[in-house]
Length: 481
Image 1: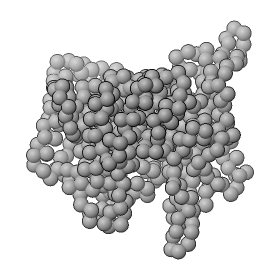
Image 2: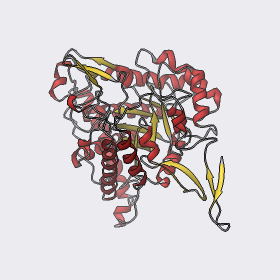
Image 3: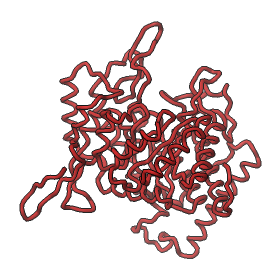
C-alpha cells in the first residue's frame, strides 16, 4: 500500500505492508492482553506517550538491520542478553553499568574466538512486561492477579491492579536508561585501552582458570601489539576519531507484549536510506521480538509485527510446527530480506534433537535468510530443592552445544546466542566455574521472574563459545563445547 503526500516538488512516498496500519492489530484476536479497569485513563496515557519524542532513531534501526544481515550471512555473531524482566529500580547507574560491563567483556571474548564482529543487543530499556501462563495466582489462600511486570502492576500482592500510569513510567525509565547508555559509551566506557578488571578468582578449577587466563592474556597482548604498530588511533592522540577500540554499538530490545504501548511508539518517519520515502518504525526500541505465547498466525501480535521496519525476533519452541514457521516467516517478511528475522530457538536440552532439524530444513527450503540464535535458558527451567526456579549450567551448555552441532550437520550455522543474565553476582542458576550449589541459591536470589546467569556464569558461556570458535578456525573437524 502506498500513497503520496507533500508538495509536487518534493513528493514523499509512504511505504507500508499491504492493508496494514499501526491500529490494524486491534481487529485480530489477542493473547496476553491486560484488562485495565479505567479505559479513559488508559486512553489519556497512550495519547501522551504518542506525543513524546522517539527514544531511538530510524538510522540506528537501519544500522542494526545491516549488522544482522551480516550475522545471517555468517559475517558476524549476535550476542543478546539481559534481564528476564527489568524492574524500574534497575534504572540506576550501578545496574546499568554492570550489565554493559558483562556484555562488553563477553563480546570481546567472542570477537577473539571467532575473529569476526559481534552485534550486541541488550534486553534493556523496555523489558518490563512479562507473559504469564495464568492471569491469576494464589496468595495466602486468596486468588489475586498475577504480576505482569513493572509496566503493568506491582510485585507486591497488594498492588496487582493494572495501572496505566505504569506505561508512562516504562517510557521514562526506558528513555533514561538509553540516555545514560549513550552518554557513557560516548565517554569511553567501552574503551579497550581501559578494560574492566578481569578477575578470574571465582573459577574453582585450576585447569579451567588457566585456560580462561590464557585467553585474557592473548587478548590484552593483541591490544598492546596494535598500539605498538600504530593501529591504535589513540596512540596518535586522535581522540576525536571514534574506532572499534574506543566505542561500540549497543542496541536495545524487548518483547513486544503490550500492543497499546507499542502502537503509541510507532511513528511514520523518513527512511534513512531514501529520504523520499516514509516508513513505520517502532521508535521505542531497536529490536523487538514475539514470544512463544503470542505468535498465532491470525493473532494481533503477528499483525502488528508484520508492518514495522525494525528487525524482529521470533521465539521458536517445541510447539512450533515446521510449516507453521514458514507461514509465519512469509507473513512477517514477505520480501525475504537477510537479517530481518531472528529465530530465537528455545527447546530444552532434551528436545533440541527432536525439533531443531525440522525447523532448519523448513527455513532452508523456504528461501528465507534468517539469523539463528540459541536461547538455552527458557527450555531448561527447573524447581530447585530450595523451592525456587533455577537453571543448571550443564543443561544450558548442552543445549547450546547440540544446537551448534545440528546446524553444522544440516549445512546451516548458529549465528548467535540469547541469554537471560545480569552483571550482578546473584545466585539464581546452579553450576558454572564458580560451582554454585543448589543450597546456595537463596543467598542472593533476586529475580522477580526467571533465574538469570550471574556475571561469572555469563563469562563462562563466553569463554566456552570462544574456545569452540577458536578450534573451528583451526580445524575442519566438528568440535563440541
